[in-house]
Structures are given as structure tokens and as C-alpha cells.
Amino acid sequence: MKDKVISYFEIDKLNSTIGREVLAGFTTFISMAYILFVIPSVLGAAHMDKGAAFTATALASAFGCLMMGIYAKYPIALGPGLGVNGFFAYSVVIGMGIPWQTALAGVFVAGLIFILITVFKLREMIIDAIPQDLKYAISSGIGFFISFIGLKDSKLIIANDSTLVSLGSIHGQTWLTIIGLLLIIVLMLLRVPGAIFISIVATAIIGMLLGMIDVPHAIISEAPSLKPTFGVALSHITDINTMQLFVVVITFLLVTFFDTAGTLVALASQAGLMKDNKLPRAGRALLSDSVAMIVGALFGTSPLGTYVESSAGIAVGGRTGFASVVTGILFIIGIFFSPLLAVVSTYVTAPALIIVGVLMAGNTAKIAWDKLEIAIPAFVILITMPLTYSIADGIALGIILYPITMITAGRIKEVPKLMYVLFVVFLIFLSITQA
Image (cartoon, rainbow, N blue to C red; front, side):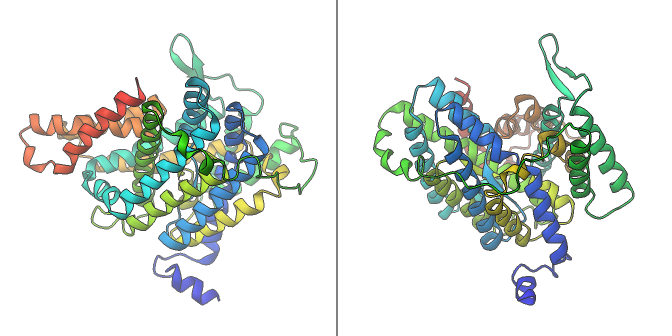
């Protein structure tokens, strides 16, 4: 059995081991386990049953991870996206007054469209058409973005009415982030295997010993019923019959499309899995994401996409789909061990996000900064991802600028034709999402 696993996932070929892949899968799960609580909380604001949303989030994430691992063979985890999750609840349901049942149907329809454009390899063509320098910028920009998430979640960076953001006051659980960050830095500089995972576990234990994290009152709990949300999307598809709802479906489609495309490229680059500026098995990876989105809608959760927290697992050595299989299994187990998952707060996982951002930012060195026509759109991608709190918006602004700067510099022949199509698509995308 062990030899079959090694052979199927090409673990030896990619210079990894089963132990390292298990550790990577576990690290990714620990780094994104918070979504089991954050996603249902946001969906609860949209009047959905939080218990059902918890179970739906766990099962949909498990399905996505298993499909990505077994079918696409990538160490990349899937889960409901936080940005599009907020759009689902606060913009669509609360802002537009659309029932959550209809919004779920919109996610389901967007997933079906995803599958169609994936089967016809349109998504793969778009990813391949993005110039290498912009891919480096996307990869690095996501690194800055997830570091910013870690800094925000730990309250090391806070909102400020005068300056937009500022350094937060260091007290309470923020100390856990500082301790965890120092632990990771020391362990990584000493080249200790699994430094990020060790730090997460150690920080959680320290938090409980210091009384900053409540000791779990139980270990196992019953999984909440899925009945309030399961299959609701199917029975409300006919509700999508107005221009407003059509725009909602297209927005789900565009946001998830480019969040996933950018994250896939960034994570594959981090793992050293890109070949000749192309993503091997891109069609399989994108189909995994598309099918997972449909399954998530059927279970009762917001659109799924690839998770940047996978970079934590990649950072500890994950290189194959077996890591994603481990993450998927842990999501299933997590349904029954929810009291223990509460111990791993965002303050505990924040150091992993911050340090992974450092690792991903290395690709900035590969950008042709001496050529202004490339440096400008690359820089816009880098700076706007964290400042707009959106991977998709950062990619959109950079790709809109790229043809303009290249044409102005007299390099029109070097611009892939598909980039002009993306130029128009992103103009429409921004006009819809920022209207």
C-alpha cells in the first residue's frame, strides 16, 4: 500500500517523503482550520443556520482537498473563500436583500459555468497567457497579502481613522503572535524541520498555560445537522430570473475565477512545480476547484477556492497531492473535534501567515524592475492586493495596466492577444464589483 501511494503521488520523484507530506497536510489544515468558525459566523449574519454552515464548510472543504489531491495531485487546499464569503453575506443577502437560498443557487450556477469554461480549457489558456513577470508579481503580492492578513488578525496592525492603518497596542493574545513569530524565525534559521507546525502547537500550549486561550471543555462533539441547507440551492435555481441576480452570478464567477487562478500560480511557483511558465495539470486543478464549488453550494456554503494558507504546508515540504488528501481527511475529522479546533485561534496561526509571506515575496527579485513598462503593472499588483484586501482586484488592476504600458513602450508585438481580452474583461469586472 505504501509503495502504491508513493508511486501514484510521485512522492520520490518530487524528492519528498510520506512523513513530510503528512506534516505538510497537517500544517495546512491547522493554518486554515479557523475557517470552520469564521465562515459559519459570516453566513450566520446572512440568516443561515450556523451549525449547518459549519458542517457544510467542513465537508465541502474536505471534498475539495481530496479531489485536488487525488485528481490534480497538488498540495493545495480548497475551502470557502473569505472575500467572496463576505460578498455573499453582506453585499448580496444583506445589501441587496436577496434570500440566502437564492444566493446559494447563484453559487451553484456559477459553478456550472466554471465547469464549462474549464472543460473547454479557457481558464487554462488565460493562466498560460499571463506574462511570467506578472506571475511573479501575483505570487509575491499574495505573499504580502497573507502577511497582512496575519498582522491584521493578530491586531499587530489595526484600523486608524487618521492613517487608515497603524501599529496596534501589544497586549493580551497579541503576545501569542509575537511569541509564535519569534519561535518560527529561530527554528527556521536553525533549519529545524517542521518549524511552522512546531511553532503553532507550542504557541497554542503556551496560550493555554498563560490563560490566554481557554482549555477545551470537551474533545469530541456531535456534528451539527446539515438539513437546514443541504440541497436548498437546487430548489431555488428558477429564482435567478433578473438582471440583478445575473450580475451576482457573474460576480461570483469572476471573483472566484481570478482568486483561484492567481493563488494556483503563486502556490505552484512556491513549490517549484511550474514548468516553462505553465502549470502542469492545470485543467485538473481548475476542474477540482469548479466541482468543489458546486458541491459546496449543494451542502450549503459560499463559493470555494484555493487557499493561500496552503503555502504553510508547502513551506514545510509539501510537494504532492498526498498533502491535500491529509488536509481533506482532517477536515472530516474536524467536524467531530470542533472543541479542540477552537484552541487554534487566529493569534496562533498569524505567525505562519506572516512568515510564509516572507518566503513568497522572494519572487519579486525575478521581476524585470529595470523595464518600467513591466515594473509599473507588477508594482500595482504587489501594492494593491493587500491594500484592497483582494487578490482579484490586484490582478485586475495590474492586467489592465500591462497592455497600456507595453504598447506605450513600443512592445505591442510581445503582448499576448488574450491579454487584450483580459483587459476588457477586467474593466467590466471592476465596473460591476465597484459600482
